[in-house]
Length: 268
Image 1 (cartoon, rainbow, N blue to C red):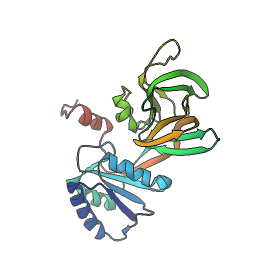
Image 2: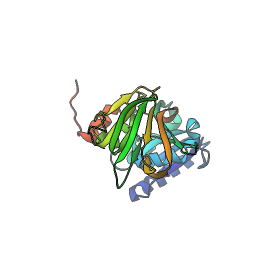
Image 3: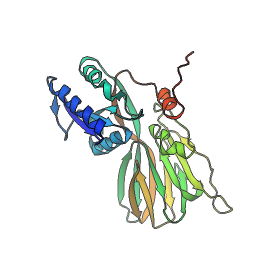
Image 4: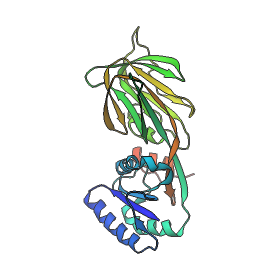
């Protein structure tokens, strides 16, 4: 089994990483391989896992992820730092429950008809910094709205608990392969009319944004990319997925409750 450990540099994280490495070194057949791993173990938080995803996104079909969080409960991390021994035992003694989450495929077409492709785990947003963004929004090549505002955010189900939620978007269970678009401070008048509400699309549908600007900013999971001379951007659910090894998987709605509402011990 080829394993690599991705982590942040927090003091608590480094302690967990050192202990984890010692445990893995005692296991027969383990090879530490940061170039072509079978399993990527992340130690930190959701941000650490997202960074690891982008590091290995070209190998995403052949990699399984396991997340250990050393801070607050994460949506991608099942284990806590003190549970490392239990996690390692589970990795080698139990069959994992596989969980696969949909990814967002982003296709940027330039004025020169060049295509650039990106993958997002959480979301991609289109914005302008010093001016409002004007854009035509198409769903399956049919004009849906003329948008004007700060920007637009397209998210995956797992990303629905992030930036999308802060924009008033719905929280969507990750087993639903849906696409969600949320507006960022839209302006409505007699020329620009938008729905002013998040929309959820079926997995086979495509959202196309045609910006009326020669330059704007596009983000991929928070990473900023300055765009010039773009003709359009296509968003759809990718055929690729991210795969997790789950051992005693935390219920999704329990994660939502713990993160945003607070623990509640009441059960039916």
